[in-house]
Image 1: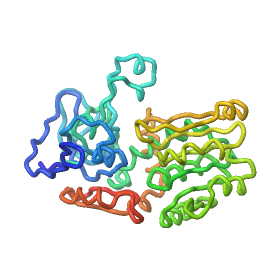
Image 2: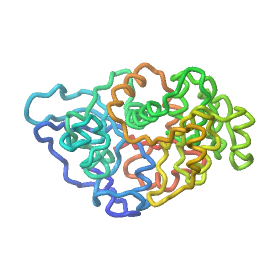
Image 3: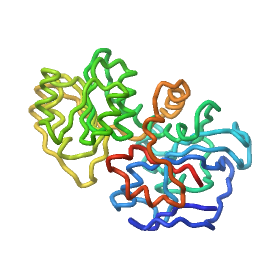
Image 4: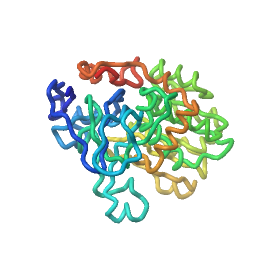
Length: 338
């Protein structure tokens, strides 16, 4: 089969005769129809994220069931499916406590085991979800990032009428924007340096946008909100942005660190201000039991995902993704031709 294998940072090879996997008991073989490029994939390419090299990367994918391992199975050949790439051990303290996303032995398709930048992938049955025929494979491949954003929304605890500030309007920030609106926020402010992304944020319902290259973001937020936002969500992972989040948060508000900062990165905060203003600071990891909800929202056409998919590539051209990622035009890049 054809597969894109990352051997080490900066070394991605599209191989034409990679060994085709076979499903074992409790596993399903999927013909991949769409697979998204995520910031994590870029981090793997840049050597900023650990992987079991060599590995077929890609963890946002959907496709069609073409083979089943031995034993009873709720799926049939031909089923259209989306995949949760995170495989939990179900044995460690966190799994047994009901916090599987914190699993100490977590394995993720596309990072620890072979993932979705290939013609075929084998995945545990428990990680596979049916999708309706009304949902395109490209939208179904967005279920994983949507499910992660749903977790971020859960951590934000948005109340009806809240003002929410989102930093970053890439694919994640624009998904988060739509979920924030569905959660009942009265006003959503988006901070984003790229004009095209700011414009799309406005199309998707942002109350206003801020260009940080031309504005003091903190002053602008205070002018719009008087005292700051009830909820501030960082989707950028930018340390200089994260260091200023508390100053843009209203007393009693919540800061969600969703964007992944550099592993060794550090920021300075004032514990006094956190205490005096009773600010909640929380992280958001993975997608614990949220993928089904993501599929329901996508199936119900509650999210405009087509607007976010700006580039569709052939697997043979996967290296182009690393050249264009993060520039003005791309938001979500997907591989759709295998």
